[in-house]
Length: 79
Image (cartoon, rainbow, N blue to C red; front, top):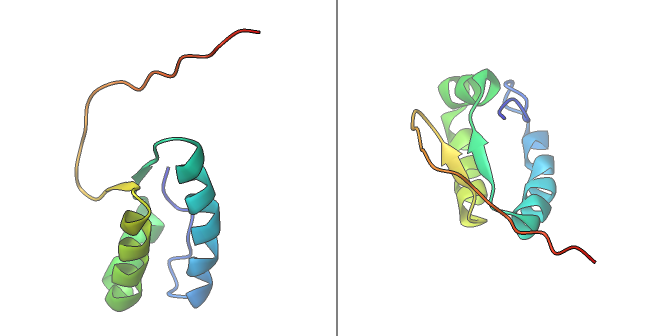
C-alpha cells in the first residue's frame, strides 16, 4: 500500500528505506503508490526520483500507473 512517506518533500522520507529493505529480505514486495507518493513526485521531483531509485534498487516492484496480475504462493512446512 502507498502513503508510507510524507508528501511534503522531507528528507525524513528516506527513513522508511531500512523498513522496506527488511521487508524485501523476507518476501517479494509490490509497492503500490498512494497519493502521498504522487504529490511528492509533483512537488519535489528530485526527491521522488531518489526515493524511487532506492526502492527499485532493493528489488521492490514499484507500481506507478501500472498493473500486474498473478498470484503469490508460499509453501509452509508444518512441524
